[in-house]
Length: 229
Image 1 (tube, rainbow, N blue to C red):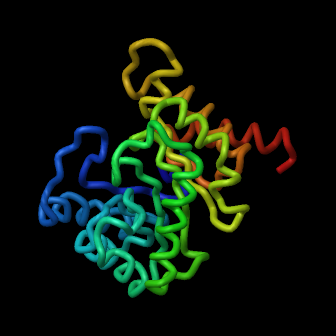
Image 2: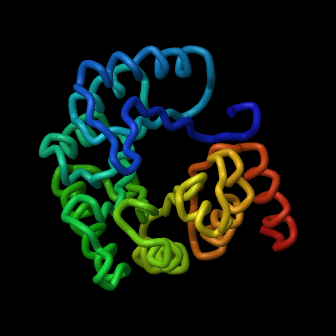
Image 3: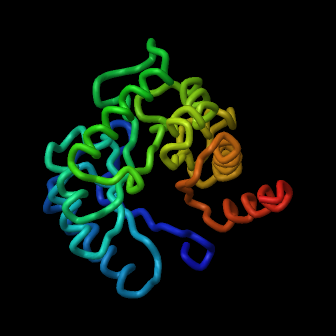
């Protein structure tokens, strides 16, 4: 992934896909710490850890991690914000419709702005600088496919007018499968995933979380070259 052009490697020890089973802190640490150490000791790349548990976050930071990627936007574990602040780390704050139930009958953009604003306020109150925060619209986390598309189309608003960088993570998710309109294995969703990512970049996304790094980089290279970016 680094050779293919990844700027950040995201390490996760617990699946958070729909219907996932929560694992213990010890189990999660046992899965991720050797991986984080292996990466940081051998490669010059930024590492993020995908966790919503402060104890796991602290262990990851001690192992050389740089960014905490929290699917609950610091609103699940009351100690997470202080762990990020005390370690002078960066944080990805994700909008998560699963946290307080389904969002299917709400205006998804208003809900996302409200939830993300709450996460930002929690982060700043804990002492995390605004320039250490990245926002994630939470594609597929309790949302419908039409809401996913609406979120992608509204990334400029979800950046709070460019105040925060936005991470778009739609690679190989159900939204890509539904757009394909046929049965697909996850790796067969890369083309549509990259198309969604490119649309996100055109709407203000600063970062893309992808599986096929080389293909995503090549598409972005063509896009940016054509636009003279």
